[in-house]
Image (cartoon, rainbow, N blue to C red; front, side):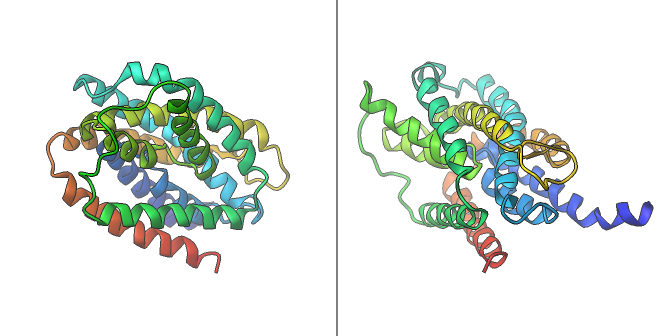
Length: 270
């Protein structure tokens, strides 16, 4: 019994470290942390059927983001950095996009999801490493029907990839003049909406054979119970740091991390 538990020690340690780092970056950059937890969860869920392994990593990541972003939202709200009016406008489009994304992901093979996720991580690493933080497309976010398309797409692709959406929503908001700290704080709330609705889709659509013990739909509950508390613990510290530390240096660190994470994920399927 003890030997069996000890054999899971490295996996549990990796999940805890991923949770601590994901929570800090969720508060710091508004990214939800899925870009970190998905590769680690993919490795940890080695007992899952290969055809559903990436689906489970993504669904479990979304469940973790629900908890993580609650902590991050609270911390950013205390600093007045959450645009609640924008969420009321974007909410329906984000929810619809997330539900559609979860349904679409269920039709893909695990290997296809890995390559999609790796492509996103590679794109974001380039964005983080290049000095383009000052680029602008306009003075304020578009309104009307056309203004609902971007949040819908953010919800869709975030649910497909198991991320909180901050990787898309923060750059999009800053391109239209939103202050980086306010964009990060608002992205935390967007990520909560995405993870809640997208996670529900994976929960309902994940009734497949061969899932590991402790699974609800595609969500692996034991992994959530390990990672989520660790992430919730560090998210407020990340939020505090977001209002103090130079964003350019943080972007560089995050960019290099994404390069390493992408290489590790691709090596597992090539």
